Length: 291
Image 1: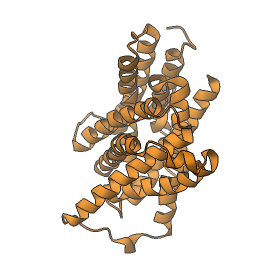
Image 2: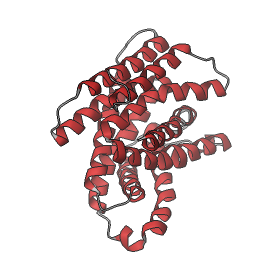
Image 3: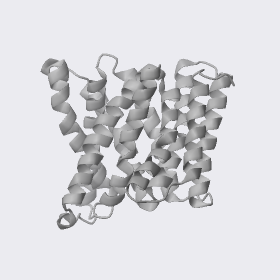
Image 4: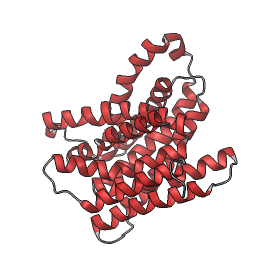
């Protein structure tokens, strides 16, 4: 159990790097092409690793049609909506809205398994949401639901569904295979959507504005915060279940704040307090503390 929690924490730490990287990249690249590029980079990184680990026969015989469906919707559309939300708000706000993922995760898990909600899960869930919302209010001072917030909430719901379906629908694949096939599905859907958008007259990306800083941020955004983070995340979901594992996402605002401090920003004690409450909720939900 400890190892699974550490895996989830590592996944969220790496995933949190995506937010400051996306802030930089969104200044030059629109959400749709940026989401597509991210998935293509992640897939290009993961495919040879999967082929080497499990063999070309496994790769060729994998259920690619199902991977296109689950990955395209769960991680392709979800990734685009999250980027769209960040382009309308900011990194910390989107990270805090993502703290609602445990609500969706636990509901999906209970509906799928037809198990009742236990008191400790309810208490742990409530604490995780309180911690996330406390950080949210302290950051922006008020709760205003706009198009960006709606996109972020929708992204969380879709990503929760995709995470559950990936674990359930690909039992014959390794975690590396599950990560790769869904990333590939997401890449395919996003590339197709990008092509349709471009053909429909969408403003083209000015690639001349892409410098070394943007290339470095894109490498972090695609290779690290998606390919590696997603692999660790699916391992955590498999061992802990989607509901409990997803509670770790509540700490993402804390991690984003840490990276902001490292970049020269101020320390936010309210964010730190919210993250502490979140961790307490995770422990109670898993039965570490009795509520």
